[in-house]
Structure formats: structure tokens, C-alpha cells
Image (cartoon, rainbow, N blue to C red; front, side):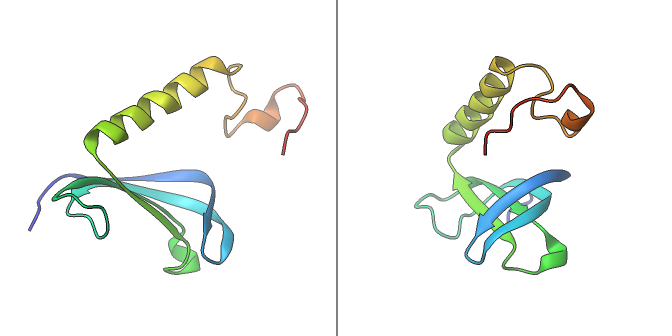
Length: 100
């Protein structure tokens, strides 16, 4: 049994699962044995909405190198965009064009 730290946070966004898009409300990040990836341990990230049941979940199992590269890529993408453009408070700022 692995006893690694599990990080649970509230998030706001959307995820796409087998049934289509759903609102994402929670994220869990932990190091443990993967279900599918061909490694003994992986960094596991679950994005979910518990109120919508088990089908409202997107899961990834990454090597630590891939997880750290993903974290760095997220920071670079945010740093390269105008401040607040993807913030939860973006609608409080001046209107901008919507690119869907």
C-alpha cells in the first residue's frame, strides 16, 4: 500500500469524458500505482465532478518527468497570456473577444 500524500483541491472548469463535456469541480493529485500506464508508480491526476457520478471523471497517469513538464508548460502558457485572461474573475475585466 502506498502512503504518499494526496492533494485535493477545488477547481473550476470543464472536462470531456465518455459521455461528453461536464463541469469539473475537484482535482486530486497523488503518486501511486497506475491502473493502465506501464510503470510501477506514476503521478496520477483526476479531474472530476463527484455530484455527477463516476462517469464525470478524467484521469491521467504520468511519469514524474511528464508531470513536471506539464506543470512548467501550464505556467509558461499562463505567463505568456495577458494577466487575468483565464481567471475565474475574467468577466469582471474589460470585455475581450471570445475565441471558442
